[in-house]
Image 1: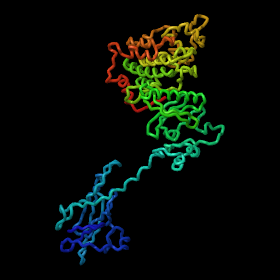
Image 2 (image 1 turned 90 degrees about the vertical axis):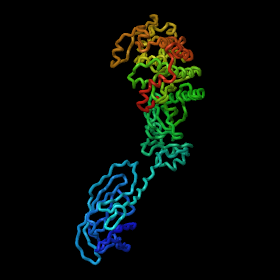
Image 3 (image 1 turned 45 degrees about the vertical axis):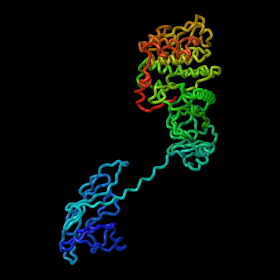
Image 4 (image 1 turned 60 degrees about the horizontal axis):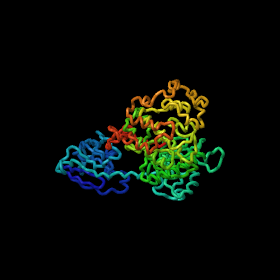
Length: 592
């Protein structure tokens, strides 16, 4: 039997003498093709049971029709169709033999098509491979076709599916800067009515917000119940919306922290694709004024530390957006407090403390050389530079000032507040050294050394370790009478605690006597390094004039590691090994 194929159909025919021959029929007329669909024209038309074999998992250049039911040699044909994903579909074409005498020798038969098995393994949508299906059936004559034989297989070319439609462009309206009017023309559907007027004032637009972002509908009017056109809350903080823009350049990814000054956001700078931290100052006059001083200080520090060697956070850009002063910084990693929290406030090694102290002292030395007071040094403001970095940086200059331009008397966080600030005296750069001593003592033990719940208890905690302050210090202190009896040789007054019990009730009920314990007793064997204890004693001094300076502290034996047994291995950083566990837990970033 000869098998010939046309672009659409395959026909089989047998004469009465047993000779298998094939004669292609004339091409179907158009009306017959419309009447019988995909079937070739025949007389009589094929029985209802003869249907084309259309495999749903294959896309072929032409439909696969059933074998001609007039052939007496075919009683059962099994199709094993290989899908593009490697699976198989097995079907069986059965014929019912009937005797028919005709000059043509054709014997019509009823055909039956049944699905025997379907094997289609799951395929990942991004790993599909199109293959040509191979249809095989029993009784084939091996290679080719011989007398009385049938072809063993037939390969049907597969037309690959059309490629998926291209993904829409990212929501960022532009990859390069464009003018506000141009962005309005192309991205008007992503803007609110307020933004359509606002965007025209910008010469450079990089980002207008994600399409799915539910933006705040700003109002151009000046209604009394609207605060800053609806963009501020009652406190003057900006209403942050994730996915929205800041100044049509920064995309808001999350909130890193909030404070009395405002909030710090994790953003993407669409000008260069860099992740940054954006500090949004509250829309209040005194905070705006302090933020202007912070921006001025940061500008001086960036100019002084152009090589980024002073362990001070880098500031990039200062701008105003919707009545809020904004400052962009480099995005740093975890801070010291969160690191201690992750390890359950376990004491740190002396090498770890030395490594942190040296870097913070270099930052303070740069500040103090420029007559700048940080005024808020604490574990939350000392951040790791990266998830696998062994270096830290000092951040948050929101309370900073110049030594000759002090704005506030109430500064520093309570646990790290120096005695001269508590007593209302004039303060200098020495208050940062006091704070550093408190931070290092906390790293050595895992908890604050002076954990007062108010200023009265804070003073009592300091006196418990250092004893009573000298009379020379109290005689010129404006607030000495708040804590001491000036008529009784500055005897400490009873503590009026504001505590209402809770976890600190036992500590509040304990009488804190001046000089009740030494610094060595506080450390409780957490650090037996005598040079470290001596370093802390020179940082935690009542009189700021007798306190060690940053430049002197950098030469202290504890920092230089001059004595035997205090050298550090340069190949393994103690800070990197100490932060190994916390850095591997994720890529969380903090900039508060």
